[in-house]
Length: 336
Ligand SMILES: NC(=O)c1ccc[n+]([C@@H]2O[C@H](COP(=O)([O-])OP(=O)(O)OC[C@H]3O[C@@H](n4cnc5c(N)ncnc54)[C@H](O)[C@@H]3O)[C@@H](O)[C@H]2O)c1
Ligand SMILES: O=c1ccn([C@@H]2O[C@H](COP(=O)(O)OP(=O)(O)O[C@H]3O[C@H](CO)[C@H](O)[C@H](O)[C@H]3O)[C@@H](O)[C@H]2O)c(=O)[nH]1
Image (cartoon, rainbow, N blue to C red):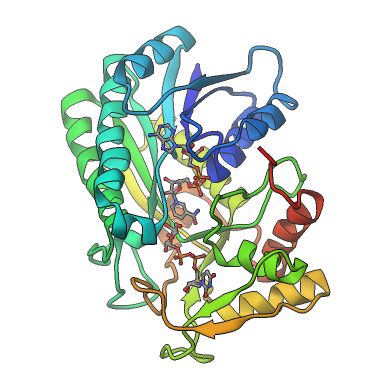
């Protein structure tokens, strides 16, 4: 039986597809390539056995293609990564974000349900919690997003139980904190355009390819910059594989945070890039970025005990080191 990986040409989806292939599973990537990379699929093909990897160019909202693809490949589970993910863009283009992330997901779920698929792992985010009322954030923390991106993810999370009741689609939503790092084997990496995330942006500053601005140093944190929980993309991939195994073993639908539980400030990230690269990381300090909570980090006890998951890349320098090695070898990312 095969796994349909939506957004499998993107950053987290491709790393998870690699883990699925390494586990001997058949993988069908479904991606519209609005942000994904054909070169990432080509890299995956180098480790796939003949017939183990299929790439379908389609939008998730195309329920007819989803249904026929699932039937053709004997798909019995889906990992749903495909979405737009810029908080700032979601503020200026909520219509596009609701259409792509919410309407698109509903079309996907319809196609999956018609094809008889009963297992789903959904990419959710700590952005569904909004401004935290307490840290670390556990799964019972109120979900009150403060931007359209977080709202779209929460809307999909809230739809999931209804699809289970009506169509038997069981699901685990994984609320990632800040995805970071790159494949330790160097096969895959991070390549967003434009790049909005702090670790790649600090690396670009170290290599002189771009400037870096710290968004605010007047937060109520030890060094005045925001605290975040950086979770290695390989650890995220492992969480997905374990979540799928749980559903396959008859485990219940669930929602889990995925983070290390350790907060790091923006300045700590910049210092780590400096240590790992051996280069200066020049930056300026600007105003706060609208919609940025000061402190976000996970309570991760639920996923540890339910799925036996534990982060293997808990050290910030180790996480940054994998990202640095990817960008050193691929200064233009996938170059496509
Ligand atoms: N990167 C993070 O820090 C982070 C944190 C929390 C949650 N997430 C979530 O994880 C998921 C993956 O994030 P990523 O960083 O890998 O993003 P990404 O942009 O690298 O990958 C997303 C992929 O989905 C594809 N896609 C987008 N809309 C599509 C559509 N309508 N139909 C088909 N394909 C479509 C894109 O082409 C791309 O390949 C997203 O759902 C995101 O919201 C990411
Ligand atoms: O050039 C930059 C980029 C980021 N930052 C700061 O670095 C921290 C991390 O910012 P990122 O943009 O790397 O990530 P976010 O914390 O905004 O992550 C949010 O958006 C992600 C998707 O892009 C995920 O959904 C995640 O769960 C959600 O919290 C923030 O304090 C941000 O203000 C800077 O100072 N300068």
